[in-house]
Length: 141
Image (cartoon, rainbow, N blue to C red; front, side, top):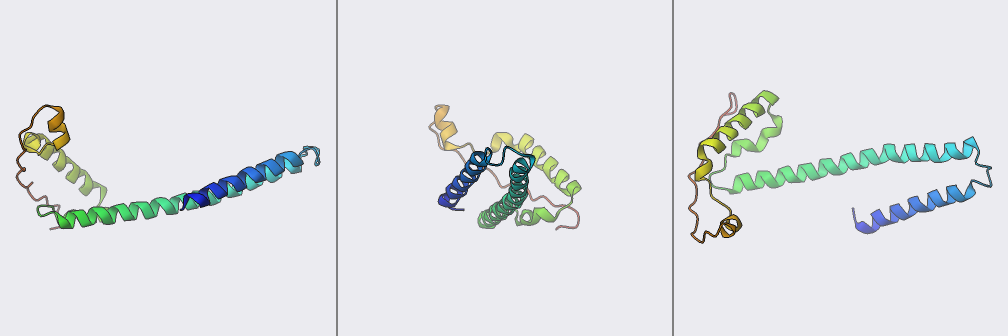
């Protein structure tokens, strides 16, 4: 959503609250006057929840598509990981445990980031790590 629309919506909200507040003396600050702003804010909050959820769903989908593309582009990547969203929680737990085991067993062989090497005073180029072994989950070969 463009910033100008967000700013415009914010300004409209401020205007509505100001008009409501300034109209209080005219309506003698009655229960109906208070009910108007309470009902209005409840409705707006309800609708904004759906707007936020839709925006999060779009952002999540875009992120997954970007990650899928990276998995397809990297030579040693396991493309079977592209469809992890459809896996069961047990399968994801086993896969996470396997990655933890790989980090523990191959951690010293993983390539260090260049900026980390520079911070540590190491000017030697790092060697590429060996490709990680393929993980397989039952039924998803």
